[in-house]
Amino acid sequence: MAQYDYDLFVLGAGSGGVRAARMAALSGARVAIAEEHRVGGTCVIRGCIPKKFMVYASEFSQVFKAARAYGWSLGEATFDWKRFLEAKDIEIARLSGVYVTNLRNAGADLVHARAELTDAHTVSLPAKGESFTAEKILIATGGWPTLPLGLPGIEHAITSNEAFHLEALPGRILIAGGGYIAVEFAGIFNGLGVETTLVYRGANILRGFDDDVRAHITGELERRGIKVILGGEHTSLEKTGTGIVSRLADGPEVESDVVMFATGRAPNTKGVGLEAAGVAVGERGAVVVDDYSRTNVANIWAVGDVTDRINLTPVAIREGSAFAETEFGGRPTRFDHRDVASAVFSQPPIGSVGLSEAAARHGGSKIDVYRSVFRPMKSTFYGGEERMLVKLVVDQETGRVLGCHIVGPDAPEMIQMAAIAVRAGITKAQWDETCAVHPTAAEELVTMREPSAPRGLAMAGSGA
Ligand code: NDP
Image (cartoon, rainbow, N blue to C red; front, side, top):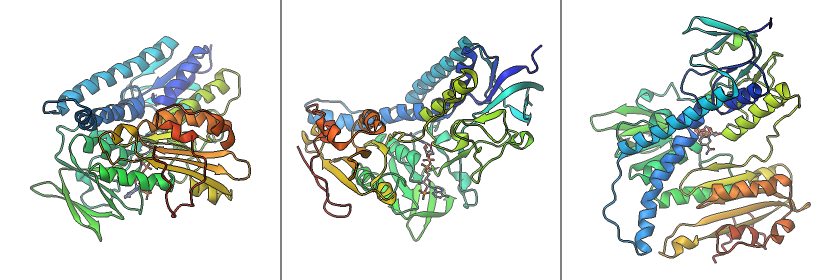
C-alpha cells in the first residue's frame, strides 16, 4: 500500500498550479488539487482575461471616432454595462470549466475547498473535515490585492477584484497607484466614458519600465482625457452625500463616485499553514524558493505569485511546468527568468522586453539608444495627435540588443516577436538585416539607423 494518499497535492488551481497538476497527473502520478474559489485563479477569474475583455469593450469608443473619420455614419453609440458583465461572466465561467475538464481529463482529483498544511506531508480541508497525506506538495496560492489599511476611509475604496463586478458604471472614478493594474483600469474606465483620475504617489508612473515609455504613456493617457495627478499621496477618503472625497497631501481634493486602489498585490499565504509545515517566507511574505522552485522543506515547492518573482501568468505556467518536468518527468528543468517580455494593456498599450535604458546604464554597459516617435498611419488619416514610441537599447561593445520598448497600437503583439530576438541575443546589425514589412508601425523597429541623443536631449522623431 502506498505510504501517502497522493504523490502530489497542489494548493491553488490558478495558472501555475493547474499546469503542474495536469503535467504530473499525465505522467501517471496520483494528484489532487484544491481551490477555494473558482478554478482558474487570478488570471482567468479576476485578472488578465476579464481585464482584456474590458479593454476590448472600452476600445470601441476610439474605434467609433476613427470610423467616422474614415467615412462611416454611425448612430448614437451607447454602452450597456450590465449586458457586457453578463456576457463576460458567461465566458469566464466557460473558461473556468475548460480548466476543470482539463484537470479531470488528466486524471487529477479536484477538491473545491480551502486547503491548509498541518505538517509537511498533510493537507487538511477544514470545511470538509477531511485531510490527506501527500509525498510532494506544491503551493500555488497566488496573490491578493493589498490596501494601505492605515489610511482613514480606506473602507470606501475597492480593488480590482470588485471592479469586475460593479453594480453600475460610475460617472467618475479615481484610481490610486501607478502600476500595471492602475494604468490598465484607467484606460478601461476612460474608454467607457467614465471621468477618470489617476493618482500616483511618485514622479512618474510605471516604475521599472523605461523612462521614455513612462513619460510617453503619461502624455498619451492625458491626451485621451485621463487626469493624471503625479506626486499625489492620499491622506484620507471621506464618503459624502455626493461621492467619495480623496484628500491628497499637498494636492487637490478630488471627488469621485468610486475610488479604486491598485497599490500592489501580496503573496497569498494567510491560512496556508506554512508555519505548521516549516516553510520559510521572505520579507514581503513570499515563499522563498530556489531555482527549481523548491522551498526550504525538501518535499514542498512553490510557484507563481506566491513566490513573488515575476508575477505574470506565463511565468507561473513555466515555473509549474519546470517543477512537474523535474519531479515527475525525470528531466531536471528550471525556468530562466531573464528577458521575460510583458505588456501593459493601457490605451495605447505597452510592450517591453529586456533592459530599460536606465537599467542598462546602471549595469555599467556603454549603450546606444535608438528611438523613434511618430504618428501611427491609421490616425494621421484623420489628423489624430497620438504618437507611437519604439526604442531599442543596444550594447555598444557587442552590438547586442539589450532591450526593446514599444508604446502604441499592437505593442503587445509586436513585443512577443521581438522577445524571441532579444532572448536569442541577436545584435543590432542582425536586427537591421531583417527587411521591413510595409506599411506597418512595426517596420520602424528595423529602420532606425542612427542612435538618438541621450535621454533628456532632443527626442528623435522619424515620421513616415
Ligand atoms: P504594481 O506593483 O505594478 O504597482 C503598484 C503601484 O501602487 C505602484 O505604482 C506603487 O507605487 C503603488 N503603491 C504601492 N503602495 C502604495 C501605497 N501605500 N500608496 C500609494 N501607492 C502605492 O502592482 P499592481 O497592483 O498594479 O499589479 C500587481 C502585479 O500584477 C504587477 O506587478 C504585475 O506583475 C501583475 N500584473 C500584470 C499585468 C500584465 O501583465 N498586463 C496586468 C496586471 C497585473 P511605487 O511605484 O511608488 O512603489
